[in-house]
Length: 156
Image 1 (cartoon, rainbow, N blue to C red):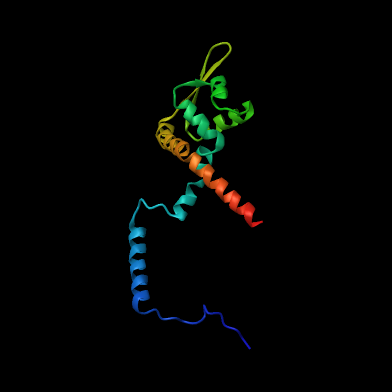
Image 2 (image 1 turned 60 degrees about the horizontal axis):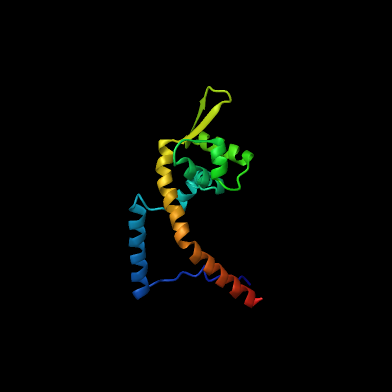
């Protein structure tokens, strides 16, 4: 005896449900035609880029450098908790990605400054908006976490 799942049985949709499906199809076509629409497929293409620019340390570095040319030791003080090694690695990565320019002045000891590239200046507008959003909504998110954690603890 063979068993059939309900997905093997053809179903004809009629009436209100059919009208809803037709409307959904029209909306899907409209969405597909919108070139500015963010989909999972095109979002996946930018994950690598976002990993670099939205990392824990990258945001602090870019926001600090946005204030103007800055030296390594000033960056070290401006980004709380970052080690010299992690700062160095992130600066190299951001420079490689074309977001920072590293200028070495021929002095003793050498003076090194970091500045944003035009691409990074454009990015900092979005980062600043993200930081402002986090500042505005941080307390709301923290309160929601406490409510959730309390509910979860009550279910155990």
